[in-house]
Image (cartoon, rainbow, N blue to C red; front, side):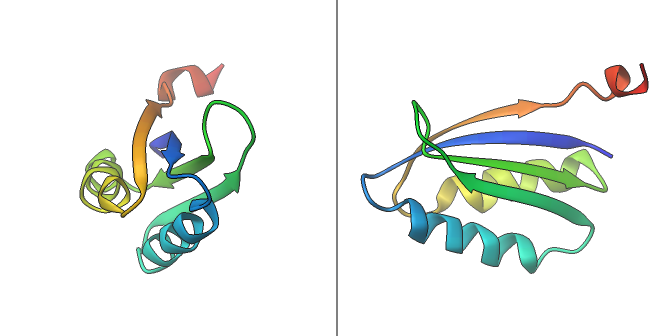
Length: 86
């Protein structure tokens, strides 16, 4: 199952609002599993998404998460599926 981690920088004080929006987006999608947390450090939010297909992951990230107001920037890291077999 394709998996990705998304690190999100947000406008100051908007992390709770963004987390709620991401939860709304992801809970309406079928065929995915997700975890989301606010974090301290360089990034404000981390999201882990697993989906039935890589195309679905790309669509969610590009067309939905990155377009949320007050999301300043994102860093997306795709898991290397072949290494999960070891």
